Amino acid sequence: DQFDWFNQYLPIPGRVGRHFKRRNPIWGICWFHPDAKEAISRARYCAWLIEEGGLPVRSITSAHEREVLWRDAHQIVAKPTEDLPKAFG
Image (cartoon, rainbow, N blue to C red; front, top):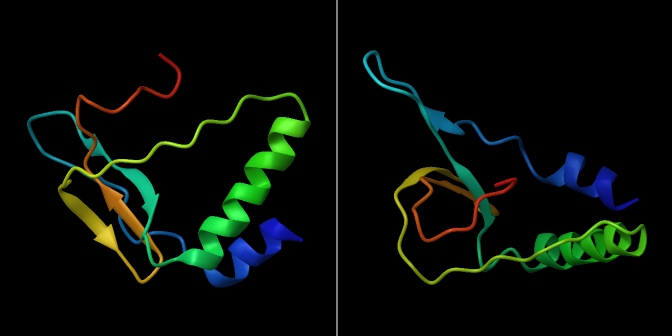
């Protein structure tokens, strides 16, 4: 099962946001590291399954540098920027 693979091999990011005393927190966006070929392949298959179920799926790529909040060998959590589409906007 694809989702079991993600649960087994991808740790939950240690940090997904930054919190401040006097302003709103910054919540990160999660990306796969370009070298995480297995994870990307499995995510694409999961996206295909979801689309087959009738829900739209969109892959977003970016070549812009981002402020990294957390990373491991497979995943990157970065500060969002205005050029990225909003999830449910």
